[in-house]
Length: 391
Image (cartoon, rainbow, N blue to C red; front, top):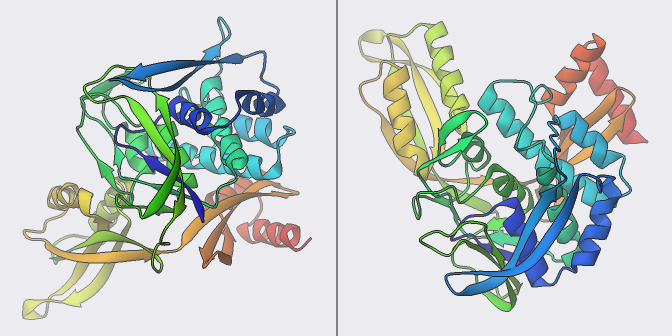
């Protein structure tokens, strides 16, 4: 099995990813020719140069926007650009899945519907080029799977259109829930939301100890000079030994018993925990001492987030103590595809087992949006989807 292995010791951004792909052998002409199919040539050009950081030589890519160009597009605008382009269907599907990942994170952070968010960084032309370019390169390299190391996120603070925010950016945190990360190598942003969305969509397996035979290495040079080399290292390799069994990640189950909070207060706590990135939250009714009815609150989170969620539980509930149970979470691989229906475009989530689609279902938020748009019952939306899928 031929793989692409991302060694993200200094994080990842969209332009660093494009640069690393070109360094691995993607022909710039093939990339720009495919990008032209978007119909946006009057908005940007690509500058590709040799550069180095800390003595490591590689390729740097810069998306040059045309003067006075200010595009603030939402997800629907982007979906239309991609869907109506003459790109291959597989490239369209990958691009839309990456953008969907990014859009859902931004919507969660800003507490809006996914189609209501008007992106700045995300909707800009350079982000479209970075994301669609990533899908094009993935297609051109003809690899079987994508593996990745833990992702360095950096530290400190960064200034964006919303003001000064902590690193990693909230959208990056949202995207990378449940995935291995490291922090603080430099006091700069090393992983952008776009870079995180590319990885989460493309990567099949995370490991810091891959058993593989490296055939070629590419370095994508970043735009900053930092204390560590600001580069993205990516290998083309063949796998010596495939990952054993199902995809499993280490996690923590946090539990506390509560007998002095109302149902409304518990519901608010659940919403807060989910908004802050818990993998899962659920309640179990129990009987405590003195025959008191009570509730066990259970929170599932990544091991790197254990401290954060303990503090959230102490802040948003009345508990005085929390149990922490180490466990492994085994999950199916997930992919996304777009389905055109008479009511509009719907995202279909596919769950895979042993390389085969085990089950599929439409994304609920898409269905609810269409039901609201046409003022029809949700059941009618699902009926339209089933008819479209049976054709």
